[in-house]
Length: 73
Length: 345
Image 1 (cartoon, one colour):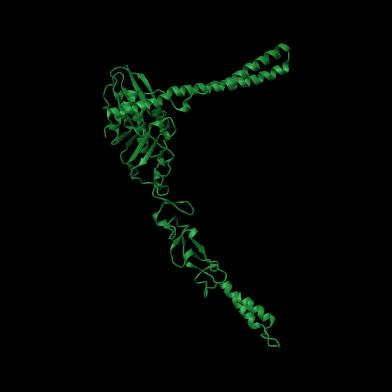
Image 2 (cartoon, rainbow over the protein chains, first blue to last red):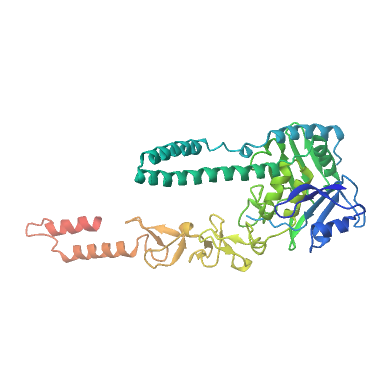
């Protein structure tokens, strides 16, 4: 099935990605942002905060935004 | 504050319309026709030189052709990159998705306002605290009509606690209501151009909630430090901070000048030295010599006359005493008249 992934980390991108059914939000995060801690990101599904074990559905919109973004001058 | 359905829908329609047109800088550059035409002309020349057996001319033309082909290829490559970037950025949400984003703002931010008249969306952050320094709440105002331009939003401190040395810096990464996006620049730009308004406000908030010690407008450790009016150095220690009694500007220890008369502190502009004793005084504590009109400290003036003028007067008076007063006829001598005149001056 397909979900829309919006990754606001670094350069950022938004694209549809294929995932297997019964993929939890936590599992999806591990696949897409390997080696990072979920606590360092705002993870929203269909614009709302969700539990880590929530299963993703076809057409879901998942956005991943780092909590620590360094500004400049 | 909840965003009403109709308001979100109307704003989303306008935002979509603006974004669908795309910003001017996204326009694809023209094809390199000039280079292409030059290639064709050089090819004809090369063929002509070949047919006539002009070896030297043929070599020259081919070298030139190689250069023009490279230029043409470079322009095409730039065009290709621009197209890739434009397509990547222009994954625009549809009107309904933008409206959903606007309605979701209420779940992320305490105060949300969509102003249809001024075409703006404003949200308020929680109070920002960085390393125990309180910066208060910030209002982020996005003018959607300006999204295709460079600066479409302002970051306004609602209870400003600006840096002591720079009143227009209200956050280590905000100056004159403009956020320096740093690492978030590309993500913010993409979010805005794709109509992901919720992501945009989240990204701005996350930058405000963080501090990058390597690149701030003012470092947090210098936040309360003020700038010396005279040397521009930061005064970090309150014990080394002085204030000019005349203009009330801040001064560091090294630049503070004490008046030897009134004992107050002054800056370089409002203090001077007595030209006689060379001690420092404020401008008000110096007095004017009645004769030369120079400014001297009161200690150096004697009967409102500076020592130099005093000496000159004394010498002139002594000269009057030294000259013979009258000639044999009882008339003032010429030397005496001159000395009198000098003494008078």
